Length: 200
Image (cartoon, rainbow, N blue to C red):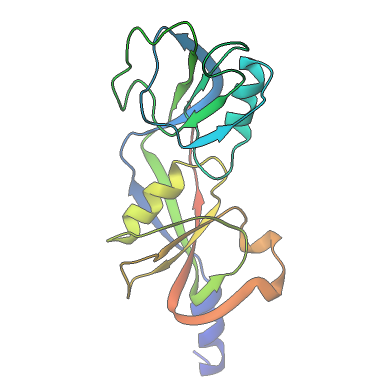
């Protein structure tokens, strides 16, 4: 083979790695109201929110956390017009009952994902800059794949196998729809794409 072609082959050939991802879950856009609340698990708080439905919408649109549940205080109570978002829900922590008439609790119904997921090595010694959804510390690339699989918006990831801190960068875009200048040369990083992820 012509040696001049080797960098191109190493860079652009798709190497498919099929992986079994453990059964997990993601929040859907459907809700269920529960008589109770999650005491001490408020991650994001909004004031002067006019209704429970508005509070739910804020949860679904929140980007700083994966919001699973809300607590809303109707006007006039001790938590009047306060909307509290949480990454926890009844499957992860115990719901306190009763919670009182001053707060309404609702959580998103679980959307279960199937086990199959595939990761493709697209660029070796490169990473996709910008478009960062989340940054995680992972002991292996498989765990980075699992984290990506739990986000609806995660399309790809950068992984640094030479480090164990902040070495998994989840991305909202793939390289094919990103500017060429977004690809950064860095021998410590590899760029992967997620495909065949099925939600049910």
